[in-house]
Length: 252
Image (cartoon, rainbow, N blue to C red; front, side, top):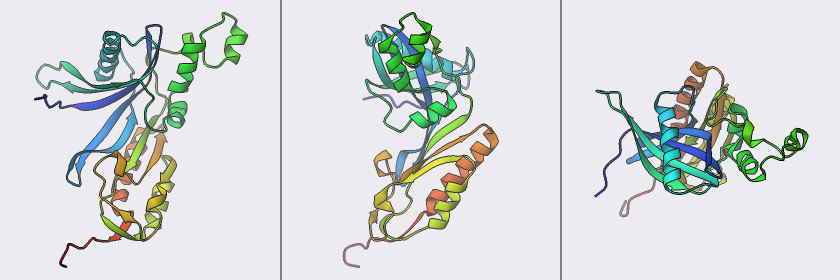
């Protein structure tokens, strides 16, 4: 029997260099109950670590301790945790979900480069190439490890939005008008629909996990209000991106 962990789920991309650990990006998941599934990805949002206190800082501190306990001293790790703040005491409790010795399984580079200024892969090179002590040579070798802060500072709001299918059956119509509205939102900087869902007559099923998404959008904005408004609009638009001929039950 395993305890059910409640709270907000975070993921951190961490690079280690001989035991020195730095967070490349901290992500906050927006998972919602939909289509009969309890935790369906809607967004993977970059989270700011702007102070020495708060949930995000506590999450990073906990993750560093977890990697130390596991003896991970080199390379890139993708670590997921759930953090919960007690409404009575305000105490923050962080629980480990998983540790993966790999990169984040998404196209994180464009958002990280734009919102943070560097990305986890840059940091891996910096960790392994090290420093020569020559300023000109180090600059030519890429991002200097010593110039990277322990936790990142975000300079814009950014997220990967996961397109959730709310229909199941055979695609009879692709709502290009809705796709065009989504692509035209001010915060949308890139958008992609998976090819199998861009042809009428192909099957589609309701999204219940990340493998059954229909596509994604990268959104970014330095205006938080507009960023949140555009994200909310995308969540509404994804409900009507496709029309289908529903599957018939046997005997009908």
